[in-house]
Image (cartoon, rainbow, N blue to C red; front, side, top):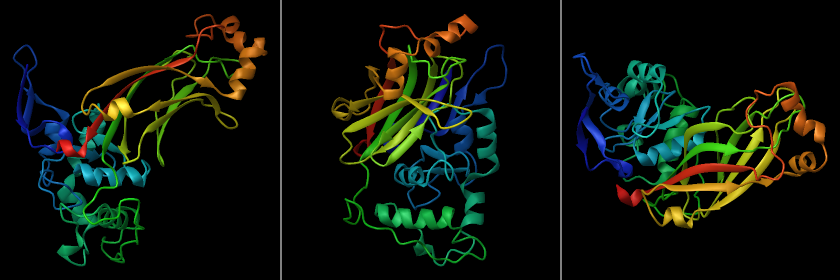
Length: 326
């Protein structure tokens, strides 16, 4: 059973745990907190680490160890996952070691390090700051270490994007994409089934899934999220085969028009799309019998060897959450 204490005024349209979300195991064992509740109880995690917003955070940087408002989380995504890996407190699956790391960090501890020499309290963006002001502060803070002890204290100059009016947003919401599974992918390797992963592209953003090895009908069940730009009308989905030697091989692509998804904020939209095969995949399908069939000769237990005449497909669940839902 779950006994949540919820906050209806959470950012990004989700009802967020304000205090505790308890799950009661059977057998009379002591109750355990959800990952979100454990993270939010860490000192300083009642507000955003990077601006003066006082709304209950619903996002986190799992590697830096801070929680964030929706606007600042959008800037963190632009930094790239090598700098900041952004996860939803309530929608993503948290590994035990990730939660443990978040509990050892927290906004208070991280800001004591990253804002040790903040030139002025006014340097930190207000809750209604422009995206340019947020990006300048966040890039200076995490990429350049500008406000650490001995830091330069200088923020980078951020060019104005398509929306440059003060207080306006460079993105209009978040697109959640649950990459579920693919079916009947072309075998791109001679000695085994493909090792597929998925890349999502929206505007200038790119996110990828983990790799599933030796499987032409892989299941990822992985949630990815991207900022939705104002003119974001099409999502490009690429399925790749990972190679241990040489460059990876593109299996196929599909373009998904986002009009239906954007028109129904908060409503999951299920899509199964037929891949447009890459030229190299087409060549294998048409003529290279050995490359397509050797895996089944070598090991009949390999999953999902390519079946001629059937389409290669990828299945996803897409949900758009607008900033206006806050």
